Image 1: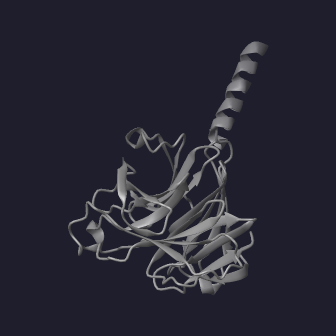
Image 2 (image 1 turned 120 degrees about the vertical axis):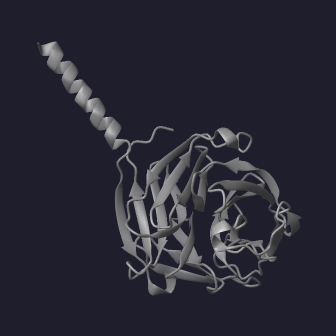
Image 3 (image 1 turned 90 degrees about the vertical axis):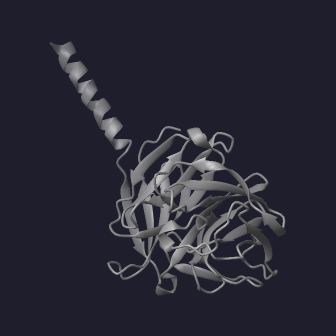
Length: 284
């Protein structure tokens, strides 16, 4: 009898552990009104970095973990046409001016600046185009060469497109050297949704993407053992980001189980938000 109850107890414990592995808690912080259209999120020296997207100032905002603006950095020599994401390596920050809602831009570029936040050095530009693109004026709902996600892997910059026609993301590579290029298509990932932000944890080979199907509910997609040579068989784990109606366009992995997002101000939200999610147990 005792053994039977023991086995039942252990089974219940196992169920609880499995459930908590996928349940996450959320902390939401309202951001200053200067950041109503926040897009992109990076972490340097325990400071979060973001900016406003399309038409905003050419400026990076440095935040503490309570969402307070602690420094504003003007980016000289660059225009904010439609900044969408940000990534870094050991020496530089890369800002993705890649928003392209109607596939009509001919000035797509990645902005490269020193990682030192006090630098006033003029930005360098990595200009590019998509060689497969043949149409340069499409409807918003059918655009294929809009993009909102950028990561860095070794000596490459990796772009994830927001393919609204096919509900997939196509993955492109660029060098980090300023100049003019045709982006190299690596492949595609069947995300069954459009990608709105990205981050990569090199140590754990963990890719995080935010995405949406209807622009109301947003998802976190995590791909373990991410490999550019095997995109077609990527093992994707989906989680709904349970933060109400949000426009989430930025993600930052702090640890495999701690993820930060930013959400733009919406009609239902009086301000943009910094969102911290804890996912509990996440074996990698």
